[in-house]
Length: 333
Ligand code: FES
Image 1 (cartoon, rainbow, N blue to C red):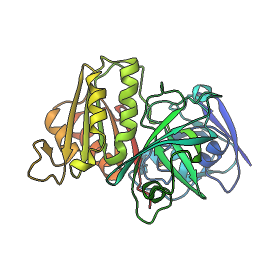
Image 2 (tube, helix red, strand yellow; image 1 turned 90 degrees about the horizontal axis):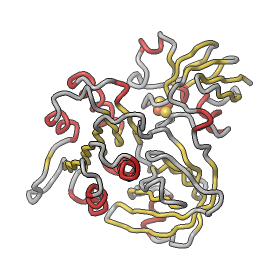
Image 3 (cartoon, helix red, strand yellow; image 1 turned 60 degrees about the horizontal axis):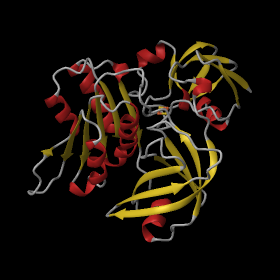
Image 4 (cartoon, rainbow, N blue to C red; image 1 turned 90 degrees about the vertical axis):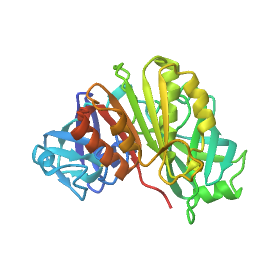
């Protein structure tokens, strides 16, 4: 057993030999920054201050050789070799909301083609709190599926998820086929993840989302409406076709409440009837903004989109690396 200490939060927990540092932290209720949990995205990066860790497999894009040589590690891909002190300023320690497992009743299922909007209600006590942008694990018939919360943190006791139909899966087919019904009770574990808004800033925001990556962005928009309604925001939502803009009516209603909001839907395979932007959202951001040095970008979608947009915005438009916040997801089967 090894003891892990995180600075500057002074959080301490123990790890077993057979678990990664991230697994140990989550098991004990410490909600450290993470997304892919497989060494692909770089969200869980930390700096070793003292002690040794053994790194397993990871993608070079998540941690460069230079960063590794400088003592940086991915918490989802490393095992402690004795006691370790790690610098992880992104983790707020006691201020972070501890995740818990709880029952949740299905209140509403709205199937829209291959997308479904699912609303769950939670027990009133103790009240459920989360930060906009976080996600929940849904525990269903022995599987665990992670979905971002799409609603406002101010919606007491409610969770909204956007679920794409994945043929051959367990959870999404149950939702689309009707075998999971209003009134059924699931178990959920939440809140999880660290894709949250930097509220110590008033920089203009660019939100980019592809597919159901729109869900956490919608939650961030709700939160902006509740806390910083005048903050400038430009949302790009990318999809293959118009059906991929599955929640546009609710989005437009939300944007109406944000006086400095712009919205650019971008379709990659639009039919001739489409009057709006075509292609890929990264290209449209590059076309629209010559200089991103004074912006913050929040990106949610596929790993490829996130990697490509970060590289382009940092290298071509001067976006500070620390001003790029992302939540990458891997589709479930
Ligand atoms: Fe660790 Fe993605 S690289 S969570």
